[in-house]
Amino acid sequence: MNHESERLPGPRSGRSMALASNGMVATSQALAAQAGLGILQAGGNAVDAAIATAIALTVVEPTSNGIGSDAFAIVHDGRGIHGINGSGPAPRRLSAESLREAGATTFPERGWTSVSIPGAPDTWRMLHERFGSAPFDSLFAPAIRLAEEGFPVSPVIARLWHDARALFEGKGDPAFAEWERIFLPDGRSPVAGEIWRSPDHARTLRRLASQGVRDFYEGEIAQRIAEHARSSGAMLDESDLSGFHCEWVEPISIAYRDHEIWEIPPNGQGIAALQALGIVAGTPMHTSPPGSEACWHYQIEAMKLAFADAYRHVADPHFSKVPVQGLLDPSYLARRRDRITERAGDHGPGMPPSGGTVYLCAADRAGMMVSLIQSNYLGFGSGVVIPQTGISLQNRAACFSLEAGHPNEAAGGKRPRHTIIPGFLTRGGEAVGPFGVMGGEMQPQGHLQVISAMIDHGLDPQAALDSRRWRIAEGDRVMVEAQTDPRVIEGLEKRGHRVEVEDHSLDFGRGQIIRRLASGALAGGTEPRADGTVAAW
Image 1 (cartoon, rainbow, N blue to C red):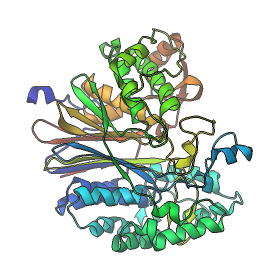
Image 2 (image 1 turned 30 degrees about the horizontal axis):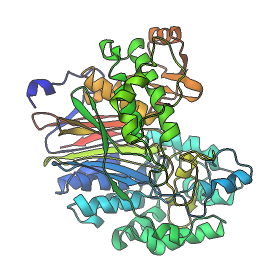
Image 3 (image 1 turned 60 degrees about the horizontal axis):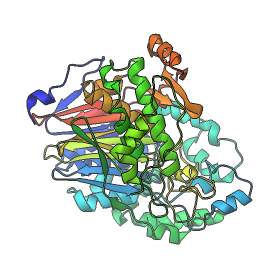
Image 4 (image 1 turned 45 degrees about the horizontal axis):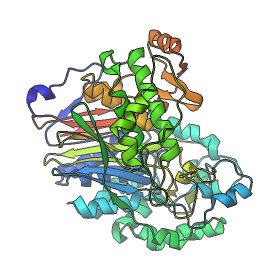
């Protein structure tokens, strides 16, 4: 790759991109990023740094993730690209039919029924066994210290913590009693700058470090989880935990301009981002200025088409045949693109040919790069916390469908459709870098927008993340940030879009990006809507 093709424009916002030569970690909480950087500086590689950052995030961002999260990752080891699916299945006794018979019309979002088997701990183990170089127990040390000694709660996390009180406090549900004890110890959530300690969390991390993370699935911790489930009348038991292992997968990709975009295959929704990019690539979108109403119109329409397909087809491929190749087939994408006009459209799924979350990225001097995302799903997940452990459990089963015959219909032993998606960018097969924008259904929308900003419009990683965003909401409403140019809003409305201005910027995702330049230097950007940083040396 020549230097001219990799030249990046200067900063277009109040914050410059970060530049470094030896290593870099970017995530949404500064202390977690520093934890990963410390591992790099001590001789660890990018995978070691990513794992240490992920473990630290379970402490400093409990609103979005925890030891009981799911996780996905893409690793470029300098030679090739690898993916890991760390999402767990529903307990084997779960049945959509029984929920329908009980009167449910949608899948429960909170409580034990919403819990599937957490995959994050096993993800850390498998990543380290294949790629790690530092002692595994050393990767827990920064998080243990933060949990034991305490840390000042950062502003965005304090806000999310406060907002979560209404979800669990005073509900009279015994499933939430431990959540209140742990996260509202004085009957309130911590304010920004207040020191927060989590001794139960620290003890659990120490055990995982000393006994290995399979203790979560087969040892003393697994027994505690299963016992709490039994006492609560929940379906999860020891066999559900002991039978679980994460899965290595082949990432899927699509060519976009002169780059390749990589995502984890279904049961995740990364394919929606790839479809949207494949659809929008053939429109006049790139000829319009970034952030213009014409640019946004084509992106929005492409995303609506991709979402329609994802909601109909994405499911656990071990239970339903997901037509991945068909959904990414150029001729199929061209037919989907033909549905886009100059006006907002109402798009249903096509028939392809058969065939609360944290994100982090890390890179080292040797060429290894990591894109990793882990999540409890909705804020604080299920609200179920295992007594005396600090383990809050995700509510990923809430992403199941109760529609009879749907590919994503809930079933025991089945993984739900997943929202969290790490991304990776290559050029001519060479690693360019990891990227991600967390936030539920915002994630493929964020991937589309930051990739277009960098590749179509030449923005550097920080400027791409600083740019205003849109997101599609229920009923094909288009939400835009409060700082959006009124002329853009007016233009979208004239095209028939139902535009609403939203003050809550966190609903537009939180992203991180690292790019390796032709010089070998690393360029990083961090989300301005969050508390994060790019830690580099």
